[in-house]
Length: 332
Ligand SMILES: Cc1cc2nc3c(=O)[nH]c(=O)nc-3n(C[C@H](O)[C@H](O)[C@H](O)COP(=O)(O)O)c2cc1C
Image (cartoon, rainbow, N blue to C red; front, side, top):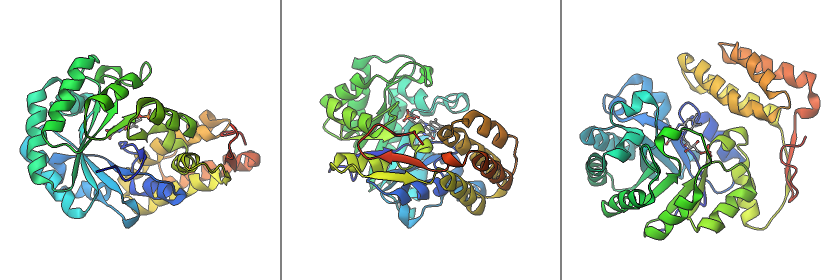
């Protein structure tokens, strides 16, 4: 079965909130959305703290819930519970390299333990009737192409419907460039769809990666937080239209922060507001200065005040011209 879109918005902890997803969907374009990674144990325990992160809206679809964990029974039960809420796919995290995740055997650590990974996938496959996918890095502490292919073929043989590859090994974090040659290799080696991910910063690059690697879709993360309209531009470029758009960057900033305030409990406001502002401030010429002022704020209202202040001082930056076939993305 083909994927529902050529473009995917990456799952990102503290960023892929329902509020942010609403903004991405609002700009349009063909795009699959993800939740941020959700701890399987907390889902199964029905932790109240998890509720706002699990929230799913009609506009989210096509949408994937991503789960993280190392115990197959817990992962399978979490997958089943999330499927019940309605989604397009349940995705298993085999890419996160945060110390508190890998020390439990989860995330990218699973790439060094194929038997445990197999048990998790097998249990989830039995539990989930909808699409089941894996988002992975190219290895735990090295990117050996033969081991990568062997691991991915194991996932395929266990019934995974598609795989997203971020081609850096787990120890690299974001260092060095993503090795898209590995995406091409995986595409050649598997029958199921492959999604490539890593370092894409423009619609032109997204289409180039699709063409060069033959992969079925491309996923964008950090750039999508800075430019939630990128999927609209990708889709337009793919269909040959090159409309120019005026993006109200200031208003979008305020809108996302306001939605975070209105839809998340207060104890999540600071982390979510700061995380979004870190990436989105890069649209401003003096983005570092803007982010530094926002970071001092504990409440969303204070963050919004700093945004208003910045654009009052730099009104010419309030809108951004994008698209139109010329390379003027980012020029005000
Ligand atoms: C702040 C942040 C949080 C992330 N959280 C997750 C996550 O929850 N699950 C996951 O699979 N990947 C996560 N990632 C990795 C991204 O999904 C993606 O693979 C990575 O950013 C590379 O894509 P990019 O170069 O387009 O950003 C995260 C990345 C960032 C920057």
